[in-house]
Image 1: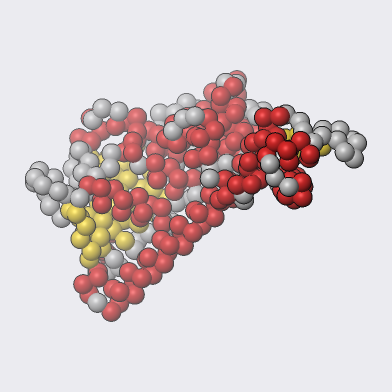
Image 2: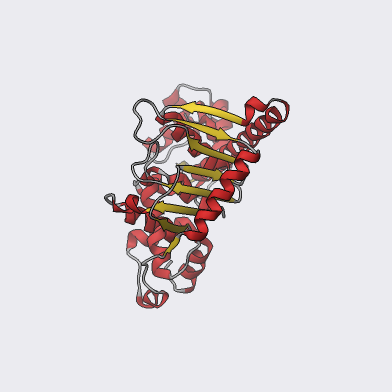
Length: 326
């Protein structure tokens, strides 16, 4: 399993053996593993290069001891995750280029129909992951595909600088925990407004792709939606959003003022969270190290942003350093 981050099975077996022995010499390792001495020397050199093994003393023939794997292997794992994220973004961009090319040659590709709640959720996630500048939402009560608390992609997009503007139907804010979810989004940087009534459900990404349900909310059966590319129809949906945005009432965060942070001292778990965050560790990896969900990490960071009186993650990093929180 560790081959994906550069540790071969032979190296892993040798490292695990050395961990069990605590310290050992080359001949002892060769005897224990029933492998040639030259083979052991080769793989020990590889483990030294990866920061996993050191001599136990200054003598030339000193025994060897293992080093903790989290720092060297954790760094390799993060680089692998970053490479995968880059590849995912490239695939999303290539997919958009393909759809744009198809639309230029075939009007049927201007609108794609997708059916089923899971398909809608997947497309909404893909659209947000591919977002570069702005996401627009019409948020109505009783979501068809993805409740607000499940939309972790929004926090990831906000963290990388994507602007979010959302209009909430007033009835939606009466649902349990809905205001709390909206509050977390606003703390993370979302611009939120409210209207008594919205005409449709709608999501628009970067003014180039829209997703809009095709059937009324009260209809039975599987939900379906149209994915609309650049066209006069998309221009009309953008104009629809902007007209309702002008009429909507802004929702403000109820976060405490910035001066509350002056006497605030973070708890031990918050210090660890901030240390990983400032070091540039992705939310998913922080969640894994802390043993919590990625949503919990994002909520805790949003809460710390509120205490620090900032609305961006770089602002939180600056305030955490300035106030001596880490």
